Length: 235
Image 1: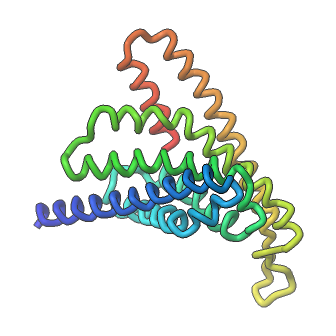
Image 2: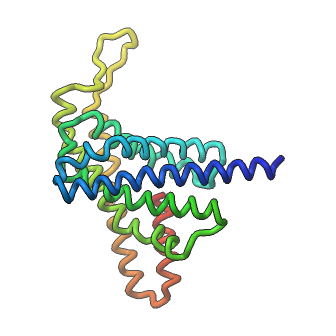
Image 3: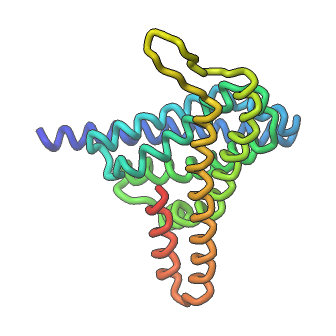
């Protein structure tokens, strides 16, 4: 029985990882193609459907973590997935005014490269028991560049959406009401920014530490171990 369940788990994760991989690959292809041919203003419209699919599918990873399907701790998975879902649905989908901003392009490209590598890594590992060393290196190294560009784009888009949140009062709940409860989406976004910024400053400090380690460590393995530690710390 345990063997059957293990086999089903493996098949499910293989299918899941490769389906989401192709979703992100489609976002990358359409995004880069549109960026070159039509400019950054048209990127969101070109990638909206596959982006919403691929990023929303990541919600399942929270469930995977909760039920023990994967080893990733919920304490690391929940903030990462939640923040991306917030930007995807709570900012880009909810406020069309920011969709033409150039940060949408940098956000999409940063997310795409990160996720194409990540899902291909896990898909290959589940299918064959291990992943190629180059893919392993990409998984634990590219985030040093893509994490800062991604989080900067996220913060920038939230910031640019603030005036539209305040003006439209979208998702706001005003009193009096039957629940005796009020909610202001604008102030909730400010709280999100307050959480984002310290994380951004911390990653910059760690990136500088990583660069320093790269200079003083002659051994490639030591540098890989250090970048692996940074990756696991944030993911």
